[in-house]
Length: 294
Ligand code: KIV
Image (cartoon, rainbow, N blue to C red):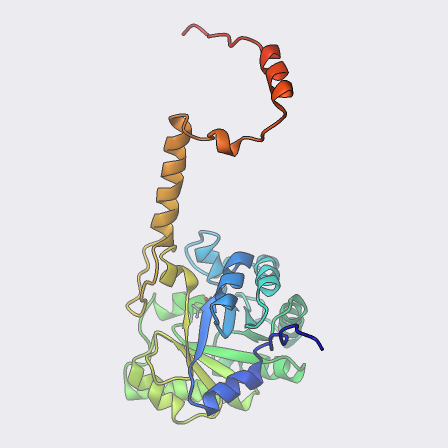
C-alpha cells in the first residue's frame, strides 16, 4: 500500500469554471520569478499571471510596451518551474499579436511551450480576429478590457474606464466580441464596480477584475503592489498592502552594510572550521599586514 500523498491537481480552465459554478472567487496574482511562484503556489493562489507589467515591476521601465517576447519567456519559464498547482497565464506583450494572426499564434504557442495554461492579450473588438486565431489553434485565450496599459497613449494615462452607461455598453460590446471569438475569460481593469456588474450579468465567459470591484468571478492583484515592493509613483486606489517587502529589504541591506563596515560580519559562526593544527599552521604562515601611509 502506498502512503504517498495524492499528486497536486493542476488548476485548469475547467477548475476555474467549477469555481464560478460554486460561486467561489478565483485568486489571481502576478508572478515573474521562481521564488514568488513557489510562495504564491504554496499560499493557494489559483492563477499566476506573468504580466507584461514585468516591464515596470522587474525591469524598471516606465510602461509595459518595451518588454519583448524573449524577456517575457524568461520570466514565464521561471514561474512555470515554481507553480505546481496554480495555472500560469502568459501575457502577450505589445506587438506580439497585433500585427498578424500567424504571429499571434506562434507567440501564444511559445507561452504554452513554456508551460502556460492560457494566454492573455489586451483589447476587445479590435483583437477579436487574433483571439479567434489563437483559440482555433487550441490555446486557451482571454481578453483584457478597460484600462489597457499597452494603449496608455490612446487612453490618455492611467484613468478609470467605463464611467457612464454608454461607456459600459461599449465595453460590453468588446467583451461579447471576445466571447464570440472563443475567449474563455476576460479581465476587467479599473472600472467602477457597477460597470463590472453590468458586464458580468450579460456575458457567459469568466470575468475577472483588477480594480473592478467585487461582482466578478475572481480578483487579480499585482504582486509588487500587495507586497509593497513596487518601485515607482503609481499607487492605484484599488490596492491593499499586505506586506512592506521593499522597506524590509532596504532595512535588511542597511543592517548588513552596517555590520560589514563595523566588522561585525562575518563572525566566527560564519567561518568554515578546520583542524586546530592546520589552523595554527596557516595562522603562523600569514604575512604581517602592511599599513599604507596616507
Ligand atoms: O501585466 C499585467 O500584470 C496586467 C495587469 C495590469 C492586468 O496585465
